[in-house]
Length: 316
Image (cartoon, rainbow, N blue to C red; front, top):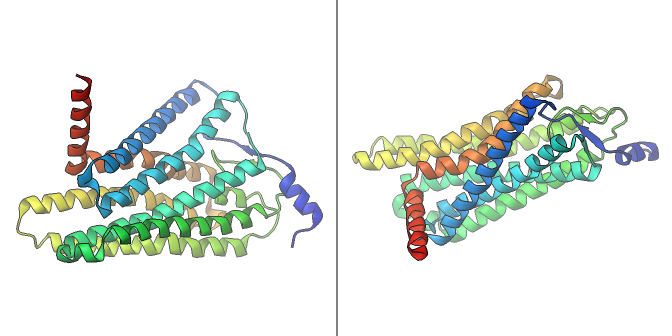
């Protein structure tokens, strides 16, 4: 239980985000690059969601789950980049206590839900390739809706618990966060009490949201690979490999840095490493997801061509 003084110190002042960019021409150039990535991510994921909604051939469980992945990516990158850009342009580095808590809360929802969603998507591919005749039973729209809802609900519950606990830690000394957004590992360093018990809770959550889904994904793709190698049709093999390699690319880029960030003890964290790793799963991955899933997917490309063709004919 915190004393009144500790409670007052915890909630009284804003935090300072040191950020990712230095206030010089190179920082401005890097910010421009990040804003371009941000716009590509927003546009790419929005187009993917609209294609899935408009094109009836994409009304399948796989693309339904993919639309939720795109929606999560839009919200996640929007939770981080605008504030980072505003601080750089305005010359400010502060973020309110409430703003920091809100950023942590949203970030943990999207990170946790996306981990579970990627596992659900790997299960969908496993059923589609390894048990195609039973696909409509094992993986239908009702099941995919329950999967997506479960990802959002479990991610929200986990985020609520961790955000509440993290923000009730007493921050008695410096309020300078050496990061470009409020993230739990970076904030733990600011607390003036022993955070070992809480770090144990973070580790348990990491096992549930990272190691278990990652193990499910690896097991699913091991079975998929075994099945694909026994397919006689070369065209079917190419299609299966194309779809699965896209998913695995996303998985490796997402889970790798995420696991490295959240499953290391606090003493092993360095600001430079944390920032570089965070760029991968908060900024780059949301941009690459729609590119990977669209450019390497014939159904999505076909839908895009038809929608564009229809739009051009209407204009003419």
